[in-house]
Amino acid sequence: MGVQNGGGSSEITRRRGCSCTKDDFLPEESFTSWGSYVNAIKHTPKRLVDRVISRSKDLAEVQVKTRSEHEMKKTLSWWDLIWFGMGAVIGAGIFVLTGQEARDGAGPAIVLSYAISGVSALLSVFCYTEFAVEIPVAGGSFAYLRVELGDFMAFIAAGNILLEYVIGGAAVARSWTAYFATLCNKDAADFRIPAHGLPKDYNELDPIAVGIIAIICVVAVLSTKASSRLNYIASIVHIVVIIFIIICGLIKADTKNYSNFAPHGARGIFKSSAVLFFAYVGFDAVSTMAEETKNPAKDIPIGLVGSMVITTALYCILAVTLCLMQPFGSIDADAPYSKAFEAVGWGWAQYVVAAGALKGMTSVLLVGAVGQARYLTHIARTHMLPPWFAKVHPKTGTPINATIVMLAATAVIAFFTKLEILSNLLSISTLFIFMLVAVALLVRRYYVSGETTRENRNKLIVFLLLIIKSSIATAAYWGATKNDWIAYCITVPIWLLATIGLWLFVPHARDPKLWGVPLVPWLPSASIAINIFLLGSIDRDSFIRFSVWTAVLLLYYFFFGLHASYDTAKEFEEKATQDGTWRRIEEGNVTSVTKSGTDAEDSRIDPVEPTT
Image (cartoon, rainbow, N blue to C red; front, side):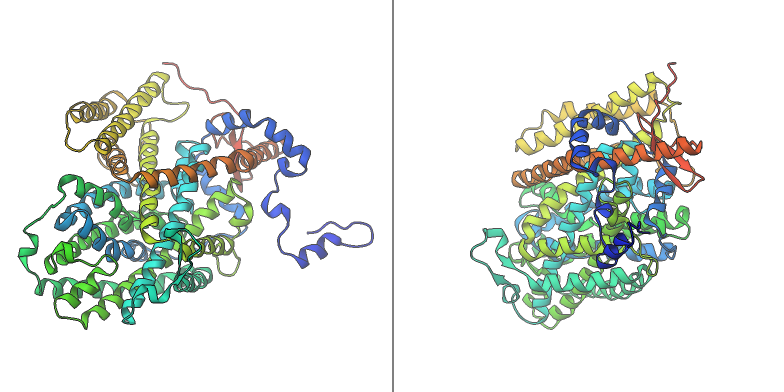
């Protein structure tokens, strides 16, 4: 409601003229005036410490949904999630990067690269699944990290999650153009506009990519269930085409093409594996749909794990098929399967493959659009980003603002940037997030504030640091040397002993209520090691771009996100103090409160831990 001033209602009139106001973006106390903002900046160090040590609780993440004004509709089953999972993953990675990495990287041993990436992704799936079942909200890994590693680490991860989705969508959209060109019997360059005044890797403008993103935006905004139905159709056609490729490709197989199985040795296999991790990106989008799942405890494990197992098997078979059809040095980097059929004399089949690839990429774009909007929605609910992004439309039950903004950013990147730039940067961001989720799961199992003793907490910290640092040392040594191996005799045993120490000497502080990762701490520890190791195989320029993006995130956080989330915590604390209704939701300097069970956020207490 607007506030009337004098004889009129200027506030109401203004809102009718423009649906957005400053309060939709910066409603917090620190931004009410320049004086308030300057005062907030002066207290940045104190507020940063507050946010670094503040950890949310499961209940807070669930109850924070009320800030979206309307709830998302629970319409999805495990069957929907399996198809969403396959639709999210099977796309540009397998149809484009397979050719690039088979020709220039692993050779026929690319099947091992896919298997390694698949194992890493499956370990991450286990970690995501436990969190998604226990904390069924749209925030995905952002919510999980906020609960276990605190606000600050959650924000850094959140920025990389959003980067992952924008870059992933842009990469798939540009690949969509390449296969559309094949279907039209044209070259991709025929559909792109050269811009000679722009830098080398950003000067091929792609209007087709922007067009397909716009269409996906409309579908994602209208309905999650409609998106699911469209994904069914696209995924079914896609699976049929994949089966066609496997059967017809193996008919034209020549085992002589496997004579030089690993031309670049183990290093080529692992380097390709790091790049091909791009092909598995997307399954985490399924975890963001937990809030819209009818029975999360049953549906999410079946949907996530089932879709990943099926996807990994298909990837490996497709990789074998491609390298049996052609010598790896002759594989086309842009449209490998279409050109492979043309090379073996089945030119007509390239059009079937191109159509199937387009269907698959459309599914990836659609599921990515649904997932990335839900990530942004939940992040905005915490006010780390403007709360305007958190609004859910009352009729469609979808986060319209978040969907449109994320896809607009995706379209801009897709318009300018080449696939090679996008794929490496995407892999860094994704591997970093998956590593953090595995760390968060170990913290969840072995540490509960107020229950875990100080001695056990310190042991947990030591063992976690040893696991992470030994993994980093192994990855760094791999990246810095070519044939030496002596350091592995030190770093790998340290990782092994640290995991054994965590297993034997730190008791579980919490067991999962509904579904849990098996073989803890071994599976999460292995996930940390593999993800970090694959990071060591990515090129230097991609790490520079990743560092620049992280610096941008920190600047935003210190000047805006930190103060907005701090004020939000303070506001809910004061509200609960006035109402006399307290519930401990967040730990650290800021705890959580609720108001009649409807709102839950953080307020201030100091956690008390046993000393024995």
